[in-house]
Image (tube, rainbow, N blue to C red):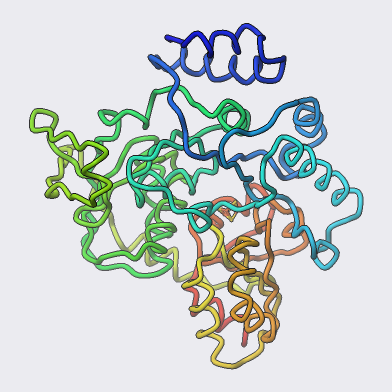
Length: 405
Ligand code: F3S
């Protein structure tokens, strides 16, 4: 991989041991994946934050680092709501360790905004290069926004934050973003059914790039749930939806290069999709069957990935003025919540616990329950393995009905 003189000086330790270590991470990845150079990135989102997942070894590693982020950088959800952990079955020892992790990141100039939906803080533009690590955020950035990021690990996203660059390989390169498999879905879907679709299709697609031909037009929230489930039940980092997602797919011999000026002016290339011959027809009955299991839950957990304003409004509307009679969590980002205080107050008035900075999967708090009802294919996939809790999936309206029953 070619390094500039300045990058080489960092690699050789001229700017201190932390930056040297970070550059070594970037160069090692670049060499493994055949990158030609480093490229600047606009922002970093760093996983490896919950004490539940990184433990003392992770805390020690971050604490030993020096330096400051040179690009906007935030964190993935941690193990607790930083202000409300005492109401979450979190013990003091865990809370102290979690606080030390956050402080260690803050010392490195990383903002303690812990969310898997960084695009609600600042929406990347089409074609922006990023270094994000949470799998659903990666999928959303690539697929829904047309930005470009590989699925970074925590250390490589941190390296990108401190160096301001990443290695140019994988999904940063246009030719690697073509679809590899066509998924045909023959019936319309809505709401949580998109997450269930991702849950069903993910294992068939693996780390491929699916292009969906759908009978319904998904909203951005529905795309978010589709991507989150594809990324967790498979290893998808980019998907396309025919006539919906922004990336313009053209056959390799019929290429139109779009320059920066075109993008700034909002110029759109006519959509011409390349549909791979490798095709999977989805049996929608598998999706519907997943949605039909309604064993009684003791926790209803919404907001995986972190809820948008529209999703919070949908929950409030579904309550129809009633108070919940079961434990209900809604996870969202702190900044989004603080900007929408009236909405959050409305949910809390009806007995819902709105949790910031954390989620039902990365917090040890969920382990205290037996059965979780979720509206997310990703939470359905991870709660049994990460929390030891059985899960069922239902629409948001069904979750709220269950909560009020
Ligand atoms: Fe986000 Fe936690 Fe789900 S990190 S995507 S809410 S598992």
